[in-house]
Amino acid sequence: MTYWWESVRDTIALAKEIFPKSKVLLGGVYPTLIPKHAERHTGADVIVHGQLYSIADRWTDLSVYQEAPGYAVIMSSRGCHWDCSYCAQREISGGRVTYRAERDIVDEIRAKYEQHGIKRFILFADNFLTDRRHFRETMRLIVRTRGLHHFQRAHKLL
Image 1 (spheres, rainbow, N blue to C red):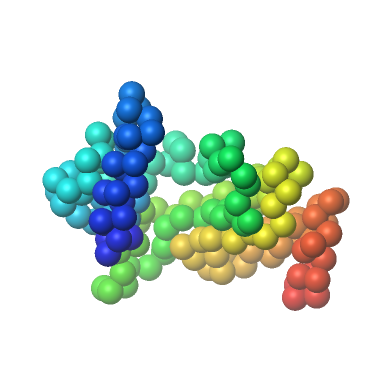
Image 2: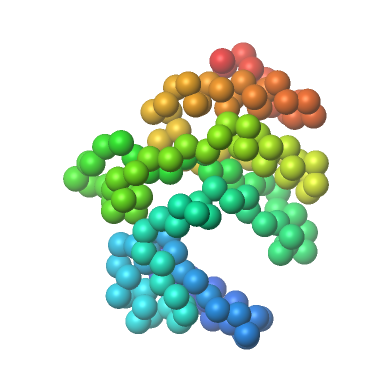
C-alpha cells in the first residue's frame, strides 16, 4: 500500500541483508501508482508497474516459512469492470478483469490444508461478487471437496 512505503523500504533492506546475492523486485499498488517514488526510496532492484499476468495466479510459496502461517490468502480474481473516480483499480489492473479457475482455487486451498495444516483462508478478490456464477461455483467446490470439512457450514449460505 502506498502509505506503508517505509515498511516496504525496511523489508527490502532486510531481504538484501539476508539474501545479499538476490535481486529484489517490487510490484503492487505502491510502485504502480507512484513508481518514481518507489525507485528513489525503496532500494528495490526492479520496479514493476501494473499487473504481471503471467504470474498473477501462481500459488503462494509457503516453503520460505520456518513455520506455516495460521492462515493463507487465496486470490480468486483481479481487476474491476468499473472506472470509479476515487479508485486506482483501473490503473493497477489496466482495466482488465481476470478470474482464476474455480478448481485451481480449491486445489490451492486443499494443498495448503494437507501440506501445511492451514485451516483458515482469506478469499481475496478485487470484485469477488461481480460474477455470481464464479462465486457460487467456487463455494460449491469448496464445500464438496473431500477433506475440507471445515467449510461445511458455509454450504447453508449457498
